[in-house]
Image (cartoon, rainbow, N blue to C red; front, side, top):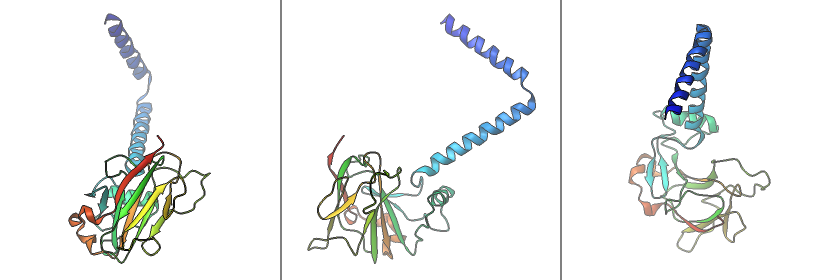
Length: 215
């Protein structure tokens, strides 16, 4: 303990010596640079992934009813600006995203998932792989999503999409990379649930189940 105390004392003296040799102008520039660095770092962290606030949980999915409204929070606007996307307005549709499966495990590109079921009533919808990392440049862009008009369905109108790295029969959605986190985006266009996302039942959204994992 005496050794640690001695190191602390010497460190404190050295810090005071540096301050004594630093001019006030230098300290001002140092403070401004530190503040700018911390501000840029926190802004990058807050807008790097999905929307940080305003989500409504529906099973594995999170609905974002206000990201395209006039009352959207500043963080949502910053995320939209960084992505270069035009969000769906309340009267246009509803965005739902998923970054985990039905068991609460984070979606990983090294695993295989089955997205199955139905969607809330809507004139049209799309399911795409969104963000969460750069696409592997060695992987060709074969498909990034499905639309309600092209997906293969069962006789009862329900569908099943396999999200995997390897080629799969039926509705196959390729992974964008070999490993790492992924996020799904479900966009409902001209849907009556856009103004009441909190009333959407879990059975009305597709399930996300992991079938196998390479890790």
